[in-house]
Image (cartoon, rainbow over all chains, first blue to last red; front, side, top):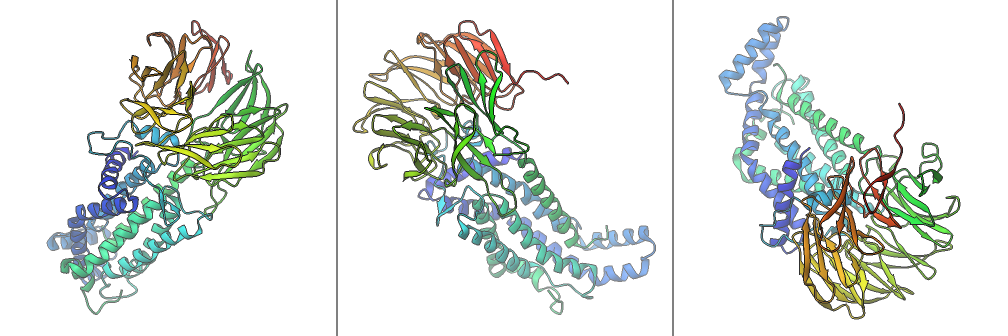
Length: 250
Length: 374
């Protein structure tokens, strides 16, 4: 389904593997950095959108009280508010939605580069870009990292491989904590409750995700979270969302 | 639209969860991730048929025995690799699916009785799938595994006698000649191991992975690799004698007959090479991805191979011209098997998984399983 992304991503991994001293971890890390650089503008714009949404919370609550019984009017007023503030209410989930195909493409790319089933790698044999320098003969890539098989999901036989999904949990939680802006106003508001749930749900969801698929995918999530944490500290624009409404609670 | 931003992220996450669960749900049934194998011995066909290993009469494909007898009541996993018949045993392997979130696939090698398919012993130490079959030598059964090891087991008891670790997955069958095991690994080495204790005698390093079994002729091993090259290697020293450049990976097992080696790359180019010099005699492009190597008729006049298009080709070994072809539904990813004047071909993902044809004209003799009336 996502082979249109998996094939090019697999070829990029092959090229990076060749350029980075035949290190699979380095190749996946480099690809993760490239992907995060590509979606950086989107992430920054999401942060701004989130910040604006939070700033509108008191006004939204006022509208809720005022037009609570007239749903149509409430929706009209809210849309007017969003329009005036220049916010797309769907903007908050856009980066997440855009990253989903990337994740599935990456899962496929890792399967092709570090094959665990022969049918898949046979399929990939027809999609290697032979014009890329030095990629002939690279498949399968070296699959072992710290005794873990990067092409396989974590397994009890390699119990320490569960450390990677745990790291995914920790880094995603930290990223969420830093980048989710504080809720303005009522702590019991729907937004505040949702925010708190998201801070728990997201890391758990990502950990579940990485338990199901190849260990190499955990590397992507961990590096991505670390990049976004670094982004928080290094790029002031990304921090604005987190600092908005200093009196609010995370 | 009165939902806060986090609601949309919540919806996105729920969609992701659904996708993950759907993907896992799709994988929970019998979804073939490898190809199946067939062996012919004494007018019986031994077939790895996904949830069962079956012994069929070669005349009419009637079932003699199955292991397990009823996979719904007694599931033993999915069987792929070619059953190997040796003395009174048949060696098969299965991949047993996980039973919970934290359990993983088990990979079991079975020795079953040749007469009735009753299991004698099993070996479940290997951590990865078995992709190709093993080979018997002396009182040992030697097989490679995706966990990177080569295992040698006692034929009678299944006791592990030795194992040898390579640097990557082992997806190739070994070739055992006298007291030496020749086996390729995805770590780009072809190894020669002492059959008795698994000690390495030599290794030949190529620019790509080895997933084929070498063919032997006049003290020379012939094998292709994933670096798009086909190699002739001295069987005693492991030194290269010549190599030949193809257009893509060489995955299938080559065959040698009368000083000519026949090999096929995964682009579907069939090559006839002079075994002594590597000079190309002829090349035939089938223009379809081909995974498995060719089978050759007993008189060496015909080559049989199939591709991902589900077509079984019979080629003239003298010039590569197509003599006949038979289309089936699904993909042919295994090497056909020739026995006398019958060629058997296996289809993956098709309604008939095994079909028998006359070698001379391609006329179908039977198909298995037969068409079931609704």
